[in-house]
Length: 313
Image (cartoon, rainbow, N blue to C red; front, side, top):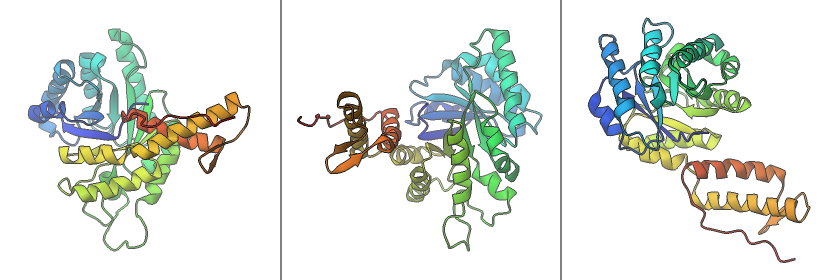
């Protein structure tokens, strides 16, 4: 899977922001043609996005574009212009307001037709589906199973909060008066279970108070603890904090790699189904848990600082 610890939103109509984004350390950059672009600027923004994908330096980054949703008159032209114009330099399309499987399937079929017509490798461009309202939440299992192109499910907090009449005006923050627990816990877990059931990544949505990095870190730590793979960021100040929160600590990464080595030695060399690492017993469940941490550490570019030493016979 691609690393998506931080997914930076960049207005597709702002050349200065597009240029600056290329030098930031976000894992994924998405050039936005939806909410960040005024209706009168949509056509010009498409041209800017195509030029940026083709001419920019996006080394080491996942390159994505968020198109407009299917209820608008712009979605089809977004897909056609971007994929025809820059499909070879595009990794994913982000589909906002995905309400059921047919939305993702429409996008899949249109991209497939463009690929076949232009000689692009069929199926290479991925899709990320943004869950943004009650209908999308109730149909999330079908959405998660809708296309082999699908790579992630993304929580869209602002529109979803509005769709269920949640009483708050700060996107990503707890609603005033809700003092017991986490108002978003069910939503996050529902997205996470649907994603994991279909081998997809789960990405948390943005936190709009962009200057309050401590609050961003607190909110990001919540979804990271649950098992989310990353979070949308809206400002360069959030990038470093997001990368840190969604990367394993060096100590945890080293231990995960040691668990994998110790278990492999016990099962493959010694012919046993369990092993010990220090004072801890490890088994197949330990291996699966360690795989998760090790994979996240490798994707984040961590390097081991310890080496496994087989126990003396």
